[in-house]
Amino acid sequence: MALDIENMAASSTTHKYSVILPTYNERSNLPIIVWLLARTFTQDSLAWEVIIVDDNSPDGTQDIALQLQNVYGPDKIILKPRAGKLGLGTAYIHGLNFCTGDFVIIMDADFSHHPKFIPEFIKLQRAYDLDIVTGTRYRSKPSPPLPPSLGRSSVMSPGGVHGWDLKRKLVSPDTVLNPGVSDLTGSFRLYRLPVLKHIITLTQSRGYVFQMEMMVRARALGYTVGEIPITFVDRIFGESKLGADEIVSYAKGVWGFSSSAWSRIQTETRIK
Image (cartoon, rainbow, N blue to C red; front, side, top):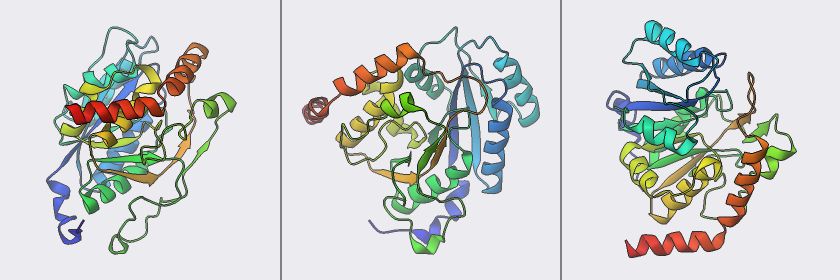
């Protein structure tokens, strides 16, 4: 695919990036992650908004979100709460209803995903006109490679994880499926808005298996996917949302969603 590097800088004002942040008990994390997002987008002269989908947090997360609206403006911080914990996949579906950007970024609010990598996602997307860019903990270089004309990134480093215990490693079996993406279970991604809307309507899984099926379906549908190495850091404040019951559910989902499921999705896609 030919690269249109000359027009990449000029296109920075033609796109808007909507960040969907699902939250539950993120009172301590939310102000900092929003500040980092605002700084990242402002430094790169990018149009942006953050849609906060809060599942009725008892710690006052929504109060913080309202204060952030006063700081950044209601056009930048959009609070769209729900009645309770209804699942990650439905949080994205809910947030999509309020996105006004043509690209959507999904990420965690607990610093597992640092906004400093977002400009690299955008560079790779523009260089190859990709449908999806996903962060990967398992590659040392972008795939496909960033063109030399874009320069070497100051934040690029081999992908990896910090702060994971054994249970977290056990539920990240990305080698079970092989649709050509190294990090199926990652949840730091950039999508074209229509692409995300298409895939999400087909995805059947719930909970933490949701991300994996999304990527498998994207590849089966023929969407183009790039990968940027990221460093994943376990949450700084608060407790992990991945409890014992969810660990068991996730593990069952992963191993149930085996290569036979991958073949079934490919067949379904061809029939449609």
